Length: 324
Ligand code: TXA
Ligand code: MG
Image (cartoon, rainbow, N blue to C red):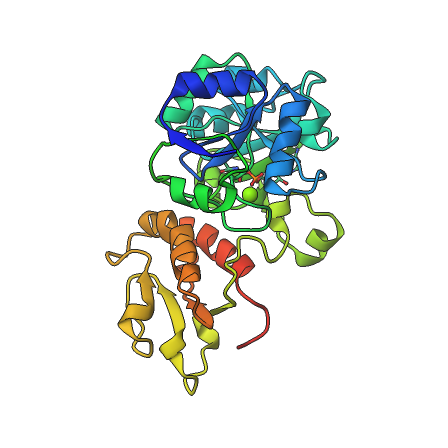
């Protein structure tokens, strides 16, 4: 199957109505979409991505009303956060109604729901009579795609169509939260920050991060170590041994070049020091620097607040535990 790239929403609708997969843009990363009411279509997502069937998918809706219509009850804080951050990069885990196929949730009682903000994605969702199930449009365990070329690199010939919506403005995945009585649990840090959530509700907010807990029960696979990693071994620049020959090593910095690496081996996330811009470039930097086939890659930590914390979370998952 040859993968076509285009902007034909009518064609995408027909493909999805007929049970095909299609890669679609969102403001976070590209998703690999299928009809969220059709288990057979959903199984094609798992096949194309080589994703374990135990790992559930996010359902994408045109608006909050449609999303909340698929769940049994909507906590007060879910309403408040939907009001504030939808459409946008926030995903909520809520108790599913039986009309949500088990194929979406991998048999789990909660379903992940989100209303994306990307204009083209919204135009598509408005045309459909069902939500679309969509994980990030990468091969399982690889880097999430933030433009059409990244999707093509990984899924070419595995899917019929990529809907071109340009580069993703946010560049890292949505924030995933759940509710435990009055508490808000953050399961994946993303484009909506802890600070954003704290300032929107009076709820206690917990970040479920502990490694021990992750190994016992991965609540979302984004928590499993060594996700989001380039193929080239990557290390924190804190662990740089300056006696190494760096002529064959790459460096990903924030706004400043590193004095010890050749300039041509470096990628700056945002020379002007804007953290949102740095987030939108992170996976692009991974893709570009990975393609250069350096022996090692080094990366700097970002200021650990707001989106910087979400970026550091992705870096933590991508770097190797052993020092170079
Ligand atoms: O920004 C995003 O969230 C992108 C775009 C395409 O929307 N999607 C995305 O999907 O990152 P994915 O599948 O790559 O990551 C979603 C995470 C996975 O780690 C999955 O295990 C978790 O959400 N998840 C989905 N449904 C869940 C559920 N019912 N219970 C627990 N975890 C769930
Ligand atoms: Mg993913």
